Image (tube, rainbow, N blue to C red):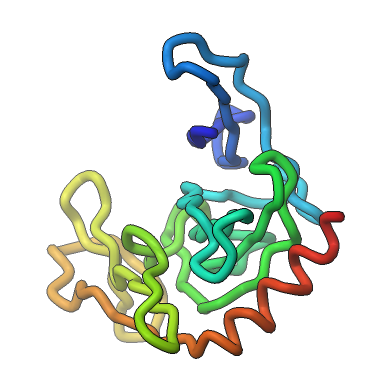
Length: 175
């Protein structure tokens, strides 16, 4: 499986599509992923970072910065087959930029298992492609402006038992 962003509308409605290949030379046609309880028309999944589940490598998990009905988060999803995915579990609230389509926080790379925990890395205060930062004005409203100096990567530690309690029910809905 390889995942790519799908743009099913002229503006907004970013979603996720996938292709498969047995030999990495010939590929299936693109097809949208299926996410339980989620319609692409209701929001924007800016990208999809799928990987083997750090607790069960026979399954997959994905992190996605998404905006759904005006609210932003970094969400966690799980899959048994790579095409059908669980409902989104919002892990971290994320502010939404002025366009209303992107979050100001994105997951970095992948989840990493270390000892008795899973590490989640998040890029806070993402820069826009124009090189401008996403900022808050004096009233706490989002605005675009000078380079944002507070961007950083933050690490979150998730105990293995907590991660298992999140993903096991998600995977259980996909039998």
